[in-house]
Amino acid sequence: MSNNLPNFLVVGAAKSGTSSLHNYLNQHPEIFMPSFRDGVNVKEPQFFVRESVMDRLHSGIWNWQDYKDLFFQVKDEKAIGEASVFYLYYFEEAINNIKKYLGDQIKIIIILRNPIDRAYSAYQHVSRSMKEELSFEEALDSEKERLIKDTNITPMIRYYDMGLYYNMVQAYMQNFNNVHLILHDDFLESTEEEIKKVFNFLGVKDSVKVNTKRKYNVGGLSWKSKTMKSFLLNNNIVKRIIKKLVTKKIRKTIWKRIIILFTSKTPRMKHLTRKTLIMKYKNDIVKLSNLINRDLTRWLN
Image (cartoon, rainbow, N blue to C red):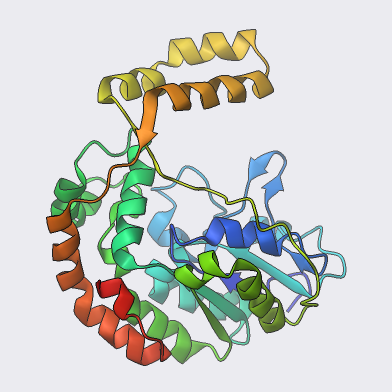
């Protein structure tokens, strides 16, 4: 194997802090993770699940040469990796391809969030675009049919299914000797301590200080009006005019102000919905708790 190929992967779960983890790891001088190539964001290549997602995502790396090119700038970093959240959900395809291209000695990092909160966060994330027009409850009831009927819809709409972690985690633990698990609660409460554990797992200096104050890909906002959301996101004429008149930096400032004006804090999940999800996830959470030898009862409160 070439020395500049990944020796670790962050495989998910989606909406569990993987973006923040990626950016914190990338601050370490002994760690290399791709972020941008030719001005294009390549933080999540999704290469090892390309058959499942390539027609559903607007970006990704779909051939082996392009994937290898992501790591062309590797110098003498000890830890080389990337983070693609769909590797956890599509674990069977991912594991087969990871073994095929990178071998079975690669280190695997998994970060897990309370599946109920993760599902709602994923829903809010998709709802900020035009890809989601249903209520959370309607989306939960129809997620299986939607993915089958609409071949272009993002896999992220499997809000419930992506939180059934037991089989996913078990498969990675059975196929790879080096698996490091992070719980999202611990990651939030003791970020520096959890990052230090990851540094030790990757075999790099754990004395390096990184800036963990900034959080990445944070949600918490919802559109106040579906009409305004549709107007702002679908109005290509306005977008083209703004693009011609102002610079990219000013466009970002304008967009931030629009977000402040037309969004509000995400409402809490309905009590009955949370109660229903707790009952549906209970068996999987208990099995996962036994598998990883961690008490996860707080996820059921």
